[in-house]
Amino acid sequence: MKRYFFALIILLIVSGCSKVGNYQVYSNKYYVYYVCNTAVSPFNQITGLGRFVGVRINSMTLETIDSDGNKSKHQISETDLRSFSMGLGGLIIGTPALNNDNQEVYAFDLACPICDKAKHRLTFNNIGIASCSNCNSSWNLNNNGFIQSSTAENARPLYRYPVRVYNNYITVSN
Image 1 (cartoon, rainbow, N blue to C red):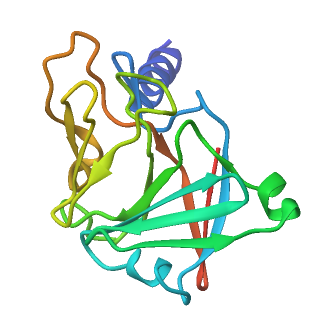
Image 2 (cartoon, one colour):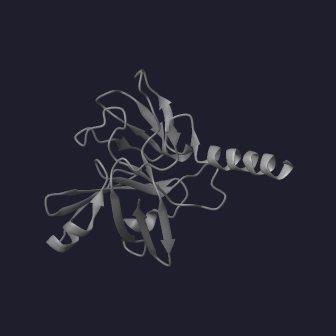
């Protein structure tokens, strides 16, 4: 009897770790698959604490923007276009400066999770604050994408995606 009770307690604890209320750590709402090489600029900034890079596809162009506002555009092939999936509005990839002793790389959706439309993309600055000009909400990229300020009733953290790092390559996929 004690074994069953102990097993039940462990099961409840483990199942409670992946979800808190309606919040899940990783989102499966939008499909994501993207790979980048951190040996190439601007992706070399991603592994620096507090540094983030935004990535999105626009027609046959890969557009990037870093935390300092530097933008770049690169033509991509149709094969690359078909092999990438950028969630709702693109990706914000970087290494948070807070509570990140292991220097893990995080990936968030570039679209506002409150407006939940691809056209409402976030802007972010060099201190890790992402904001939506449509709903006037802001999130802290250095604090797991949690809300910094919002007046919306349905305010929620940013959509976050799993990241794997191997050698100089970062893969974001769910």
